[in-house]
Image (cartoon, rainbow, N blue to C red; front, top):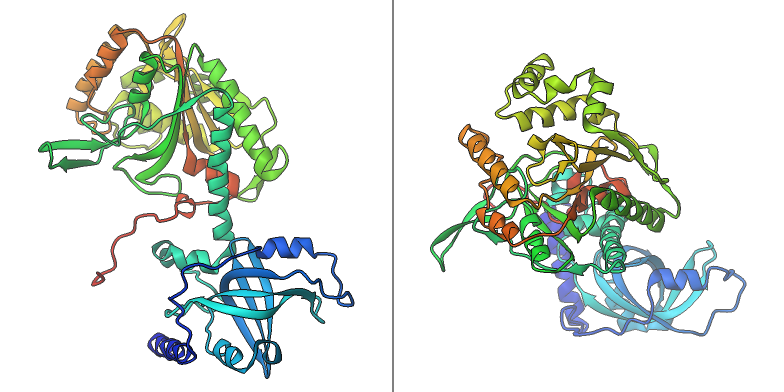
Length: 493
């Protein structure tokens, strides 16, 4: 049958239900007393020979298969916790309700009351004593054997993807629990969760291209934030010594398996901490999340077991480039030398020294970073907001945490010298004038904030989406975003 024919048949069944006095869209509320997983766990020891428990359950969910056998139906009911088989008998339900059940389709939503037994085939089953129709699926679901496999359609119609693929539902349930567990972990350490603006006069705090929009009320062009960093540090200046925010961030850049223009970040700042304190916090948080989700200190990602046993590996930025690329410090810390290395590696033209170092590291070192590894002591040109390393002013007290070739976290001891910050912003102005669009416009008010005094502070940013990818063994960032933006389909409204 064509899809149009299937829709026509479902609408005919809708009319049939209404002929039986049932409007699937009329119910306001259904009293659910249990979920599928609860029932299955509670009666796991029940045998075929056991007497049926007297306790009645009321479950609600979606019918994902219906099998007719004369005066009986077997069906699979799926709710938020899992799947349970239900058993409908004509002599129990009555002629009229049984005839109405025959008008239901795969995908319809029902509430079912009944008692548990184990079928002759050994499956725990709910023997229905009554049912209510709670919603009608007028659009047919994908073939039950093949499911929804078209990747673009999965992202475009995530609601169908969630219906059809239990592992997709589980990923997003885990995502929610991961974020909740992060909040519990952070709150227990006396941090205050805050909210800062998404629309800014100047989007600072990172090197990235911005999204710009127009605010009609003020007749003003504004940027969507590329980081929450500068406003959170303003709060530290104001005396909120431990703050964090989990929120959406926007960067008008490319899309690949680990990058998307709209993503979720945790940013956290602690007064009187150094980069080393933050590294210890970061390590403890990661190990805690792995243990909570996987029950131990390791996980499997892309077929490889990764250990999060503490302590994690550590290597200095320049040391890593010497180790994996035989690249000396002198060449790397020279803008001309870094540009020459770009050419030697076939990486093309670079608009700035910072861009060169970033691309060289990505090409030379990142392929070797499989297990959790802290890379520390980054050059100043890569770290415009980080404090200089005592005794080595060309480097900063900064680290990034890498795992399986991609960055999970970025942290540093925050620059709190307003004169140094002003000088670095002035350098950014020159670089932006030279054509590097990823360099943000300076937020000069932030320099003013520093002039009021910010204590020694450490900050960290963690990409939530990449972290969820790692913890749930998903290979694309779009697999952990509920509704990743897609190009509109031609001709559709």
